[in-house]
Length: 309
Image (cartoon, one colour):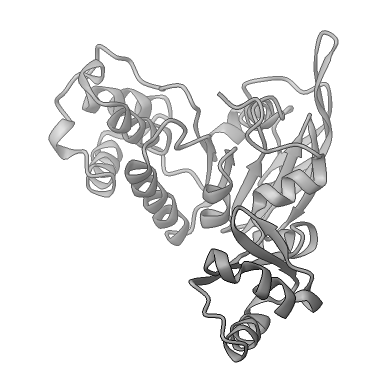
């Protein structure tokens, strides 16, 4: 559906994209995970024909975006971080205007608006001006405007940035439903939970480069490091527990013993049995598995959220 080949983009002396290459397959949710300044937005704007590339090639459904941008744009629905909407128009007026950009017939416009109103649950605000809406509702309407022409590919730039957890998860459900309806989705995020929850594959981006691409679980297995078994016992049993588990090389940290292993779920019952056999009852034994944050740290040497506003 999307093919990016050796993409380069410079702004004066700053190289925003340094030979980026990847493909997005039909029907998948593909994530660009990285901090602000990684080049995610620049890449998406080039893909959607909003910026010119300096080198490389961008292909959307066999169409070269640089050569035939208008045709490529009709296949894409782009929802940027900034609101797409005219604040003094009503929600309905904004949707009608967006549909007019794609020369939809009046009947098609009404059908699409009817579908989007139900899909995004925005019927109650159809007649409201955009400047009277909450941030979450503006984002819903912005998404509606970006897909009013029923594109095959949906491009979402930081779709839930600034949302509280409840609204964020609501928006995730919209994205999942679009995916179930057969849409191919490219989204950028600096939220590791979002990438883990939504994406079939993830490209880890840093400083204009892609440093790894794969399924989230595969990335965590290869680059995330060991999982941790966290063991908490009574303070007066701490030294005894350390001696019992010494072969597992536990590390004491914040009044807990941490055991770093590859297969924590297999070892956890054994840890509990070893302690119990010596008269030590664990207050807590839980597993912490590697995250995409761990992957990013191990690949780049810095935290994913560094520099994120």
